[in-house]
Image (cartoon, helix red, strand yellow):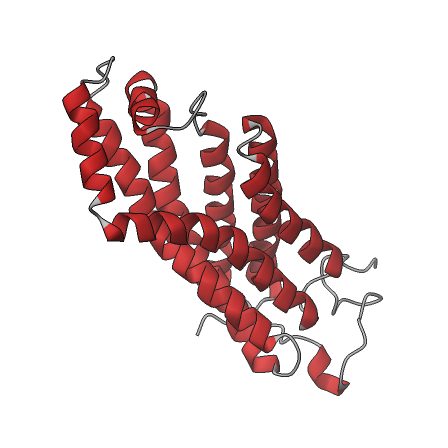
Amino acid sequence: MSANLLDPSSVGGRLPGPGPAAAPPRRRAPAAGSAMVVGAVCLAVAEALHVEVGGEWTVTALLESFAAHPGRWTTWAVLLMATGPLLLPGVLAWWRLARERGGRGRSLTTAGTVVTVASLVAMVGFGASHADGVALVGGVTPVAGALVEGYERAESSSPGLLATSGATVLGFHLGVPLLLGGLVRARLVRPWLGVVGGAAAVAALVVGDLSWVLGAVAFAVVAGVLGVLGVRLWSRGPASS
């Protein structure tokens, strides 16, 4: 039987470790794993549907985009609101596994988990704020100047909205690489998986402004890595308790 290349504890693919504790417990978390896979799919589809705001980003340009593509923006927002809660149980399950093993990787995994969880929670509000914007313009273009001014005032006077946006964007692109790095140090995932997923998460933040296609591809890679983590939870990951 061939070794599982994704699992460092599989036969023929065991990484050296400090005695018996090097092999992760073979306990399943099918609910968390399945939710993580579905969340990864939602993330990939959402970014594939994400509408690129052409030219210089302004509130007017964003609202005009809402009015011109209400269906795609609403679908993106709903998928984003679903992504956070679906990925959350799986992220916590991997953190518990790293904590149970102790030693190397535990602190880095904890840091990555805290930042990623903050991002996933904020993701719900981030998606909801965009859905509210789509409903506000009502598909009418050009958007009235008074509506643009009102939206700008509401946005600038809401610290919570700004914090939600920052936590969602920066938290996700920083938290995922930290989390994967911790899992690699804990010998719970293969180094190549952590490198690919972490690099794609950082790249998605950078290339997304340069090209919608490159951004969607980077997010698809991140989603694929998160999906692999979900499959491992379903098949042999930590218990959900």
